[in-house]
Structure formats: C-alpha cells, structure tokens
Image (cartoon, rainbow, N blue to C red; front, top):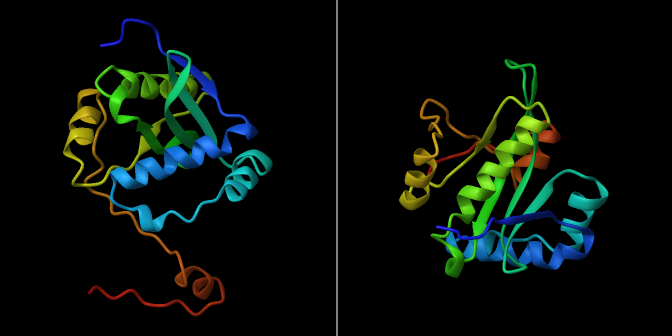
Length: 169
C-alpha cells in the first residue's frame, strides 16, 4: 500500500490534453478505443465552459497518475443530488498502491461535503478485478436494473418523434 498520502487536485482548463490522455488509456484498457470521439475542444467546452463534469487527479511523486471524471445526478426518491462517477483510471504502473481506493474515498468525501445522497458508477461485467475491488469497499451491485441508452442516430430520431427500434443481432 501507499507510504505517503495521495495528493488530489481538481483539473484546470490547461489539463484538457491530460484528461483526454487518461480517457484514451481507459478506453484501451476496456478495449473500446474506437468509441472515443472526444477531443480537447469538446472536453474544454463541456467540462470547463458548460461545467457539466469535474475531474479529480490523484498524484504520486508530484505527477498525475490517475483520474476520476464525475458529475452530479439527482435522485427523486432521496430528494437530493448524488455523484455519478463516469470514469476512474490509474496508470498500470501505479496500481496496487491504494490510489484507486483513495480516489473513491475522496469522491465519497466530496459527496458527503456536498450533502449528496449517494455515489454510483457502472462497471463492465467482464472486469472481475474491478468488481472484486468495488465489492471490497462495500459497493452494492444493482442487479435488478438494466441500463438503457439512446445514442448515435437513434437520439436525433427520437427527438424528432421517429424512434428507431432496437433489434438484437
């Protein structure tokens, strides 16, 4: 585990290249590189100009070695906001040092400080090391829920009132 306390810092606009680097590294790990269409310009607009997400870096030896990208969601049942963790990534050479746990702990602290009711995220079903890690922290899988998504050509079609039915291959 870590000998020194991890250092955290919120991303600034000059960090968009680093944010995109971490997104691409995570996509490679998840074998989803072809799905990354984000650019520095898009990240700058949506994270820093429109303030739709936040990025927290974790440092080791003064170097950013991991990140968490998150935003607020809202629970009607709780009547208050939560934090949704979109991405968490630690560079391979820094794994096993407690940095992922430290990032999640810091996000939980932020959620508590902001009065949020929960912290949640998704995990790919095949990612057993991450699943085991999350379970060890007390995270509960939401087995009774299925995630649905409208994207790509289906999104504007639905917006125009002509949804494209999904068919399984």
